[in-house]
Length: 246
Image (cartoon, rainbow, N blue to C red; front, top):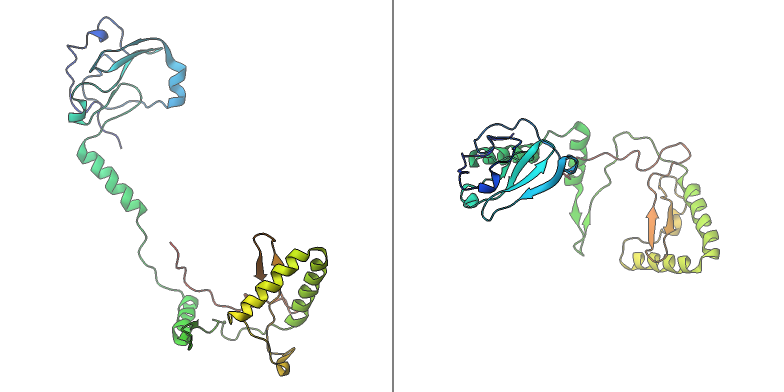
């Protein structure tokens, strides 16, 4: 959207430096629509030697099209207008307000959509199981799909990943040190607890493989996407909740 250029008729009788030169637009001082906009990259191709300036008046620049007029002038701020016969435009306050309003209408957050059946079920499981323990920590049940297939054979998968790490630790003692510290801190913070002996290698438990990564910025990565013997992972049987980010 573009308004007329300039926004009002200009008084150019006192701009003597513009007389006796061939202007690219003889009627640049009369409001009219813009026929063509040229980018800044094109501007460098058309300018040639020749420039005329006067205090409190726009500047004239010689180009292959003739002389163009641009820049501010006396009282130009009172009219919020810029004079430029080639590369810019001025708009009225009403037009500017309309453009800004249109921009915000395009950028506003869309209205809330209805949840899918899976998203609603995931939300129901969360709201129906969320509790706090004696320490004030939140506990929620994992939102598994109804009648989801069993994830079997994860112990061997997790054990193989652990042995792979042990071999890596022999080559990187610093990584081993960081890993041990992380796991001990995890247990101290009650983020995990030791499995009772009677539950070792349980047929119903799911063992999530993990590995150590990084040295200076150390982290332990728990791989919920690792496929078990039947080609299914713990991530595969979880419900997908509603997107909460914009």
